[in-house]
Image (cartoon, rainbow, N blue to C red):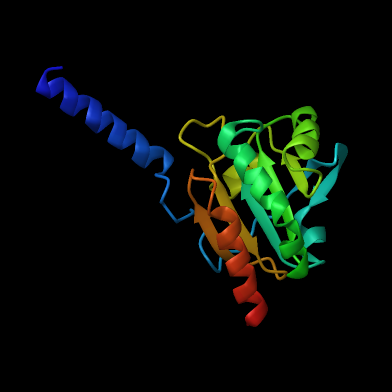
Length: 183
């Protein structure tokens, strides 16, 4: 391959990585101390559909709100398994876990049982309204970015993390919840 073409391809790949976030990137658009946008949405847990309301969830304790690109994809399945494997840890810290993607509610019903193992709510955000309010949208606007937030009971964001790598979201949000508990 001619050198100018190789450089052009490398430049394009680098700009794409910056546009969608590199796996190690640890930032989100809404920062610590920002008010968490309120929302209600259809959500599924264990295949049952109900309405999830952030304000109601926060009345019970902190909320871990995590956005993911698409149900049943490899990274999103890994992330759902990790959250479900650690749901008891979240419960010990008094936290509610809510996953959100653009998938329709029928898809979320299946995903909630198969990949989330009926452990937590998975909300449907087909127009990405919630994701947009949390600045959690990939450059390709049909997908939410992989972004996790920890929201204190007073509605303030106390932690945010964005990375397309699904492996650290659980560890990081648990650490943030532990720090919140210590305060």
